[in-house]
Length: 146
Image 1: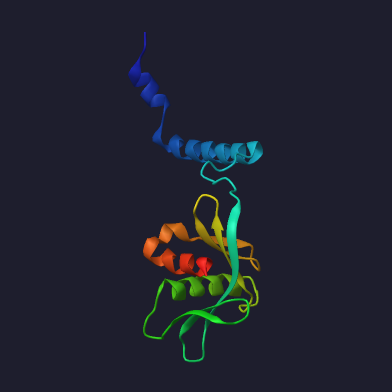
Image 2: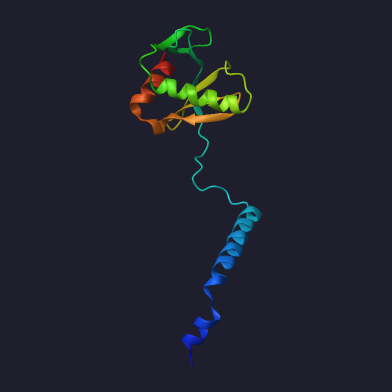
């Protein structure tokens, strides 16, 4: 017959913490050995159009998007902080952490599935802009159509 009290006396709460730690370590090692791929990685889609751009802060602290010939495509005055200013801050922070020149260009890309992203060739990082809302993306969509 099954005696619950005897089983309860054998299983002590102090054993749960070491058991959970060992189980966690075994699971992590298992994932590393089996090399599971992330489930949410999007498939590579072809690039439909791309454009080389520079996002810079000018001497008067306005944010500018320049083309490869340094012609101003879009300019935002100092008081009008926009999504572009935030994007520049993120890219520059990443470049600073990696000791990469902040003046190198970015590649604005539109992919086959309609997504728009900014690729930084210097750091090999891509920022997918679709998660930031249509109002913010329309700036870059207009630049690609020029």
